[in-house]
Image (tube, rainbow, N blue to C red; front, top):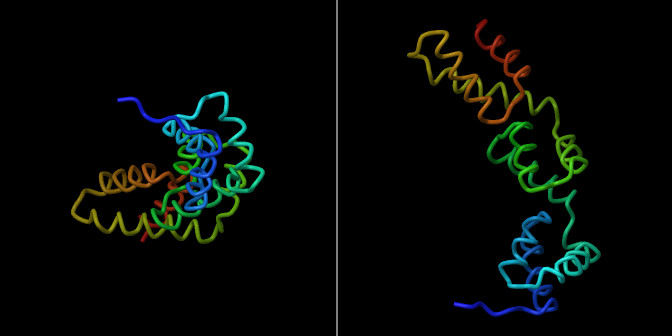
Length: 157
């Protein structure tokens, strides 16, 4: 089945709605252009128009993405940075987004996650319990050095 080709103007209208609904990165918009069947030669013009009209802003996307993943899913900086790189966001935008985190709140979140997981594993042996908790925190995207300090604080009690 052959899908209908959209003109760049029609695609631009659809993409304005797409970007207005939720912050998007450049890669998502390019993927959408392919889905809409827009010729590759027209992609740059459409993306440039979206940027000029402030529908598409990589920095704003990175800040919104990082903040949302941190607040809602309690991801650490490592995982957020990895996910943003997967979405082809620039290093400048990634670093700017990661600087938005309040360090005190970040460490409190890490401590709470570690304490909750450690308490959940109370039937395990000490070293297994500690390792499982650390693995969980690494998987959540927290930095190794912060995990080590947090685990030392928790296991001292």
